[in-house]
Image 1 (cartoon, rainbow, N blue to C red):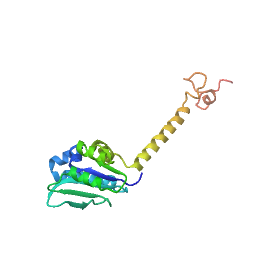
Image 2 (image 1 turned 90 degrees about the vertical axis):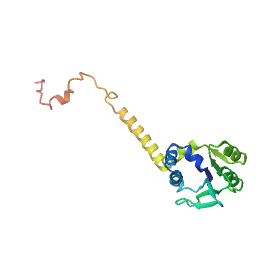
Image 3 (image 1 turned 30 degrees about the vertical axis):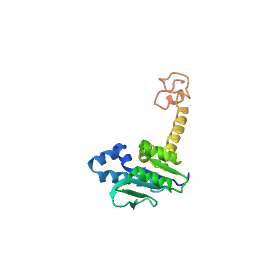
Image 4 (image 1 turned 90 degrees about the horizontal axis):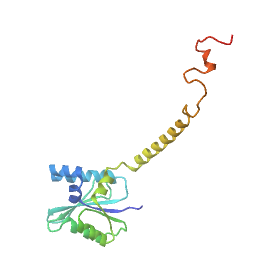
Length: 186
């Protein structure tokens, strides 16, 4: 899978993700910072371009770099334009073949789908942000597989597999003399 352009409807994602919504209730800026931090942590070492779009109230559109993500951007729209319209405009002018739009807003999803972009719901992005990095998942799967193999070997070596005949409450004949019991053959 090659590099993708990922457009995130900022406030929509914040308000539909439980941990981010809690930060948003405390302070609007805290919700934005929490979303940016999570996306930075997730996409830091990937070739993907992440663009987070927020509704702005300035005279013109502001584009800020995402710290930690070399190709990431945070966009605040101008006062007359919504984030939904800005995402539609950006997706239309995107030259990359692989474009993903993250939003639960039906209008944004339909518009992105009509332009050929992949549409992802907020819950899927939340699972992706909260999942362990791929190398840790692979390590966990390998350890689980090796533990299964060791458990299978241990099951083969159990005493039930090598059952002996005789009285189970009595030591084997060859061990009786060693335990201090007299030799009855004499």
